[in-house]
Length: 275
Image (cartoon, rainbow, N blue to C red; front, side, top):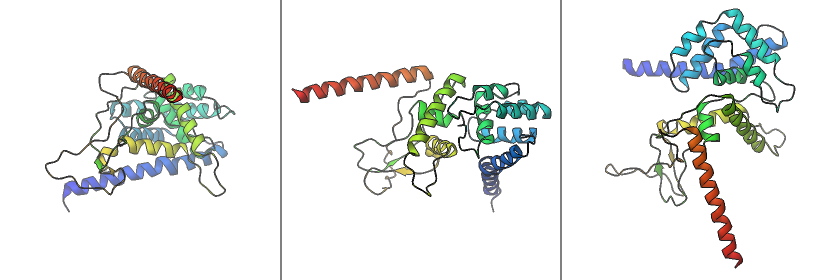
């Protein structure tokens, strides 16, 4: 087997193994430790969490050095304090728990939310992870979609979106509300035996939407997928207006402006129908 192909296979297997550890093994292990009043998180696990984070988003190698510089005792005490600070009210934003993790080097609101999400992974009310993917989807409303008049298959092309997230508590609060609203709406009217939608499910969907251009997946309107000719330029899935030189605030303002225009247009149309 070609060495380059073998390297890719090894990297993929490592990626999948890290995914299983993050979503399944570690949350279950921490849940068991919590019942035994044992140390809930080790330094080695914190380092692996950071490794998972940078392989699923923007590469920030310096974060690995920062997280490794924390003392074992500090990691343990901060993680325990973060869990202790979780409110009995599951609807309350976990600011105190996020603050409890701030003494750790390399840990900001996004990484703190990831640690909390993992530590509450087996809880009825899991803390959502403040990921770029989820923020882009649920707060900026930018995701691949097909135009209403699409009459043939469209092939997803690399997204032009460059996300400029400030990674602040206010932004995370916005995402927190959006994730919980979506989860609550999707879980309404569940029948006995149906599996509820979890925060992990929402996070995974966001990851797929943000990275769908590398999957080779094709979206179509109402007809089977058609292969474009060699000399034809494939259509692209439209994204809402999120461009490199715009800040998140400008994008939100643009979105609000489009909504106001839509509301005005709808009101005018209703008046014409009444007349």
